[in-house]
Image (cartoon, rainbow, N blue to C red; front, side, top):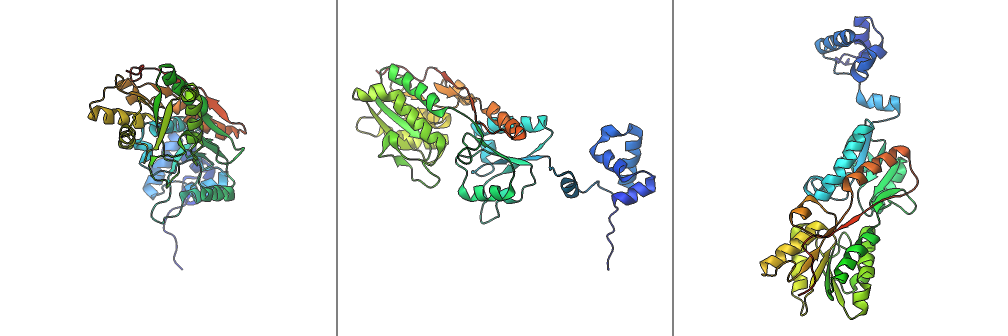
Length: 348
């Protein structure tokens, strides 16, 4: 038999003539010790090569990991590259700090690797994906940990933090209808994870697996109702993704129509900014030749003077964590605001 050469907490405590709890406090609860005693313990630990209590053992002993898992469907870099994701994650991180918890990022599994949802050492999850995939729901159900949805419930009746997407979309569509436009283009997020981009034959009545998409399409339809009832038209194009290049490609499809729109509603600001780029590339002035409105009010929207819907990304993230620790059972809807800037004007 071989012996483990690594020093243990009991060895250090015996050598110093203190209890194991005192050694543990030196690493985990320094406020419980005098500065001199803590430094004596840490110095002896360094000399003996003792790195501190086993974190995994501490987790089982306390029954709490001190971590919150943030589930996303996209690759990990999405949280750092997308403006809305960064703002939301900042709110999640701040609230985790307020509760003394760490933040564990849980992206989708890649290249056959196991889903981290099944093994992440966390006390609960915030699901920043709409919808949560069925297989991940099963993994979460097996773990029996609390979970809060961000933007949409992970399952019917489950608590979540979000906005009234229908009312917000209706407000920006009604703004364009009030300006007198009659030909509209809508740039939608992808309708499903594997749907092909392009013009959507069902238009504003298109089916989609995403809760936010469904609500925003319905809101656009209701906001444009007076114009559509009076002979107006609306063409929906599903984008390939959520980036500016995806918005530009969708806008080109709209501008290629025999009767192109005089106003475009984009489900995200990045899509709207791409639409503006596509218009400028064709010599179309915004808003004189084309009105464009977005959704989200990311920092770049103000720089571009983009008419959009402002939603509280940071607060959504922080409220989701607070609800997780309160084990809330009711959804929380946060307010939105229509921000009218110079990218929209009456048609010419």
